[in-house]
Image (tube, rainbow over all chains, first blue to last red):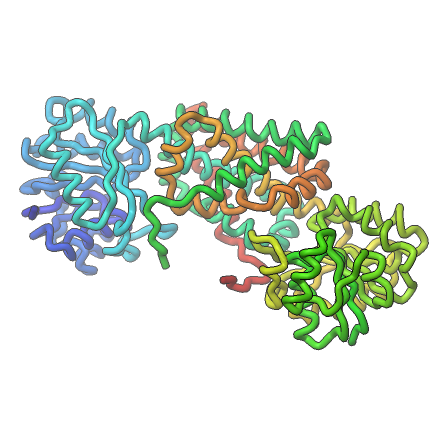
Length: 293
Length: 293
C-alpha cells in the first residue's frame, strides 16, 4: 500500500502528526497541505510536515489519492463544500473527529453520490497542546482507531483505511456512528463536561483561591482534562448533544443515589454504592495502553 | 525535639508510614502499637514499623508522650473513650483524618477538660493501597499537613505538632476546622463522589463493557480516585455531609449552565464556560508537588 499524494486539510497537531507518521512509514510520496491560516501552512512546510503548500483546500485535494480532514467538527461541512468538485471515485477521504454522526450528515449532504469514498475515523489520541509545532510521528502508535462506516461506504475504501491505520501501529475497531457517539458520550464527552463543571463550580466561589491552594494529587488527575482546548470541546459537546445529555441524566441519577444515602444517614447503602464504583474501576484496564511522555 | 514513646493506634498504611518516618528522622525512642486486628499489630512489629505490640489502645498510650490515631473517622470516638483514662496533660495526641469537625466533636465529648492536648491534623498524602505492608517512610515528605486547632488547643501542643511535621519534611498550614472541611469538600470529597457516580452511571448501562473497552487516557486519569477504599470514603463523605452537599449544589448549578448552553444551541456561551474552566485549570499548580512513584 502506497499513496501518491496526501491532501492534508488542517495542518495542526492532529493532522501534522498523521502526515509525519505516514511519511516515516513510507506510505506516501508527497504531502500537499492547506490550513485556514497561511502562516500555519508555511510553518508546516518549514517543519517538513508537508512538502507543498496549497493556497486552498480544493488545490490540496487536486491530484490526491488520500485526503485527511483534520479540522474542528464544526468546520467539516464547509470543508466538504470547498473540495467536492475534485473528489474522484478512487480517493480515500477520512476525518479525525471525536463525534461521528454530525460529520457523516455533512458528508451525505455535500458529497451526495460520492459519499462512499469517505471513511469516518476517530483515533483515540491527542495532546493538551495545539499547533503544528507539536505534531508527533508517534502520536497514533499503539492507540485505538474507530472507523464508523455507513451503508454507502465503499468496501475498497474501508479496507484501505483499516490497512493504513494498522500500518501506523493502531488497533482498528469498527462500529456504527450511533454506537460510537453513545460510547464516547459516556467515557469521554461526559467526563470532560463534568470536569469543566467542577472547575467552574470552584471558580465561582469567593474562596476559590484558598480552596485550590489546598488541592492535591487526586484533584490534579481528576481535573486534567478540564484544561482541554475550548473551541475543540465546544464543537464536540455541541455535535454530540443528545447522547451527551442522555449520559448526563444517567450520571445525575447515580449522583443522586449517593446523595440520598448520605442524606438518609445510611452508611451501609453508601458503602455499597462506593464499593460498586471502586470495583468497576479496579477491574477496568485500558485496551491499548502506551505510556506517553 | 525527641519523643520517648509514640503510641500508635491503627498500624495501617497511614499510621505505619508515620512511625517509619519518625524513626528515620530520629524523633522517637520507642513505638508501641495497637491495631484492632492482632495479626496486623504482629505484622507491624515483624516489619519493624512498631517496636512493641500493645494488647489494647489504652496500653499503647500508657507511657506515651506522643499518640497518633490512624483509624477510620467513624472509629475516632470509640478510640478516645478507650484511651481517656491514661491521657496526661503533657501528651500530644493527633489524628490523620480527612475531615475535622466530626473528629473534634468526638474529642470534646470524650476528652472534656483534656481536649487541649489533641491537635487535629490532616496530612494531604495517601495511596490507593491499604495495609501495613505499604507503610512508607517517604509518604509524607514534601506534602502539606493541615492543623485545625480549636480555642482550647494548648499552644505548647500545637507548636510541638507543627515542629514535628516540619521535621518530617511537610509544609504545615493552620486553619479552622470549618474552613478545612469546606475546602476539602470542594477539592477532594466532591471529586471523589463525582468519580464514584460516573463509574456507577456507566456500570448501570447494558453497554457498560463495550463503553469501557473504548475508554482512553482521559478517562483513566479522571476516574483514578474512583478506585479508592470504600470504607474509608464512606466515613469521609458521611462525616462531611453538609459541606459536601453544599459543594455538590454548586457543582450541579455549574453543570446545569453547561447543559443549558448546549440545549439552547448556543456555542458562544458554551465556549465561554469551557474557556473559564480551562484557564482556571491551566493556571492551577499544586502547592506542594512531589512526583510519586
